[in-house]
Amino acid sequence: MNLFEWLGESFDPGPVGGINATREPLFDRSIKKGWAIFFMIIGASVLGLFVWMILTSENKSLYFGLLILYLLVCYFLTPKPNAGNIGWLGGLINNPFRISDNINRFLLFFYLFLLPGKLMVFAIQTFYSLLKYNLN
Image (cartoon, rainbow, N blue to C red; front, side, top):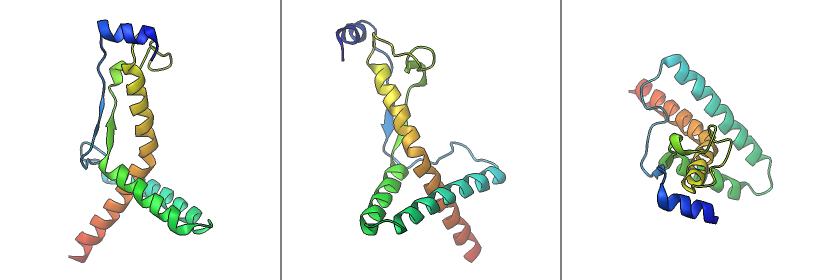
């Protein structure tokens, strides 16, 4: 944090997003069946790619553990950056007078890092619910 950010935040603090530590759905509202199938296929493909990469690696148990940990983090954590305070020109230029835009930019990158895992979790949840309702 440089001097300009410290002074700028003391005069005009910017809004900061947060991380929700509760289980949230990938989509806020219900989506159409075609889109759900599309995202389920993408999530299952990414999961299949990760499992194939793990099965061809040397240390399978470590990487399976890391994959399960990543999926649990994706299942329970949802970063919510404040999109109105990401920087100048939509986040392309850093605001030198605020550090809160750096925090929001980090939350945005953290959300993008968790997005493939959220798609994998969505695919697993959808597959499980399809099996559950078809077996009953």
